[in-house]
Amino acid sequence: MVIITPAIRILDGVGGGLMFLGEIIRTLRKYKIDREAILTQIYNISMASFFTTASSGFFVGALMSVQFNMQLRQFGALSVLGGLSTSATVRELGPLLIAFMLSGKVGAYTSAELGIMRVTEQIDAMRCLGTNPMQYLVAPRFLGIIISAFFLLFLGLLMSILGGVILATLVADLSPSEFINTIPMYVEGHSVLSGLFKCLCFSVLLATVCTYKGYTTTGGAKGVGKTVLATALATMVGLVLLDWFTTYLAGVLLDTWRAITI
Amino acid sequence: MLEVKNLTKRFGSQEVLKGISLAISEGEILFVLGRSGTGKSVLLKNIVGLLKPESGQILLEGREISKLSEEEYFEVRKMCGMVFQHPALFDSLTVYENVAFGLRRHFPGMTPEEVKKRVTECLDLVHLEGVEDKLPPQISYGMQKRVSLARTIAVEPRYLLFDEPTTGLDPVTTNAINRLISELSRKLNTTSIVVSHDMHCALEIADRIAVLDQGQLIALGTPSELLKSQVPLVKDFLAEITEEDRSRWLS
Ligand SMILES: Nc1ncnc2c1ncn2[C@@H]1O[C@H](COP(=O)(O)OP(=O)(O)OP(=O)(O)O)[C@@H](O)[C@H]1O
Ligand SMILES: [Mg+2]
Image 1 (cartoon, helix red, strand yellow):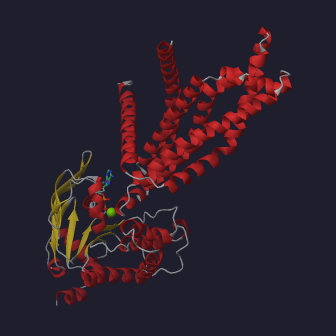
Image 2 (cartoon, rainbow over the protein chains, first blue to last red; image 1 turned 180 degrees about the vertical axis):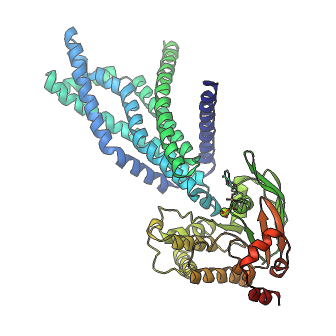
Image 3 (cartoon, helix red, strand yellow; image 1 turned 45 degrees about the vertical axis):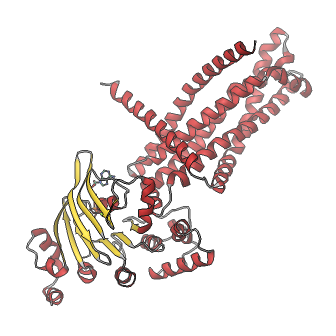
């Protein structure tokens, strides 16, 4: 009993979320989504996270340089520092970091916003005035989060390379060109693809969870509080699980691809 | 013509509506009275499809609407507007944009001038001036309620459902809104259902009054029929009416 009830609740949540994602996709295919509304969302989300993304990107790059410097120095392989640290950022760390940051900022904000609109009957009022809230509220936020995630990922990567270059010059005596020249050798097409794939999966997860939780809020102010909490919990756990799964999936895909091309 | 037949609605194990049947003819004003928590709001929300009934039928001009999909309901809601019990204004939009919201969606062909004219007109009808640019949290609750009313009547629905439109308003505004409801019906032949706790006003402007109790209709009739009713709860509701008023209504 102790295990079964929470397990059913989790399954309910996952199922509900997937059905909601289906509903969003149906909405996207069936209706025109106001471009201005999407752009507003992208602007708001990117602006809200611009500085945090840029600075954490910078520090991640810097950190990687310092860490790899210590290890690579032992093997006299300092010259590959730029390639290795950038490749790790592109494939794994970047997408995950962006997702966690967005979940803290945008995930909480969006779920609370939609939750309040739900409990104050604004969503019902909207339906009564001939507007589909899925099309007018949910879809632009969903797309806004996903598109912004890619934009922020790109920004974070650039900043991490910058941080990496600066620290490599300071601690490892590598010149910027030495750092950057090795990047193409280690960051191959499939690393980039796997990074983009992860970014897509993470941002879809985040966008679905926060719109779903917000849209289905019940129970007044307390309900909104619960929604925000549940959104944070579900995205954190979901991201970790999805990270493992996408790494696994990317590995399988890569192996098949290699098998086919050889 | 709006007909509700044998409507039932439950939330979990709680049976809120237990078989309601009502028919409202064109241009009529029907007042719905009842104690708090008897399901008046739930009844209205079922009619506009915000809640789905468990069983029963809702016929709008002969068409069964209770089983329509959300998409098909958009057409119904264009015809059938609802004023919520709580203002439910879009709090990121100004008062002006709130009132213009439905206009823009239902009449995409309207020019900005026409929209402006209609918005001003509707705000005038509910006695509001100079608040167009304010955001909902910046105006009082009573004002928000009136904006919400203006927002619903702006698109001129032929059927209007009012959920306690005057609760919490001052007597002057209350009178103005009651007059507005009655004028909409007399001039534009709008059919209205008004949920209210205001017995005086019900006797004054209603064509018929329905009394709900515990999810059932316990009385339905013209004001003078109701005054003669022997149902205990109806008599309790009418207790505040003085003999003098009573004889005036009956004559
Ligand atoms: N979404 C909901 N979920 C669960 N129960 C609900 C819901 N909406 C209403 N109820 C229940 O239905 C009953 C009737 O509620 P309703 O809001 O219709 O009352 P009302 O007659 O409008 O009362 P009031 O005059 O106070 O507005 C209440 O007991 C309420 O608990
Ligand atoms: Mg109510």
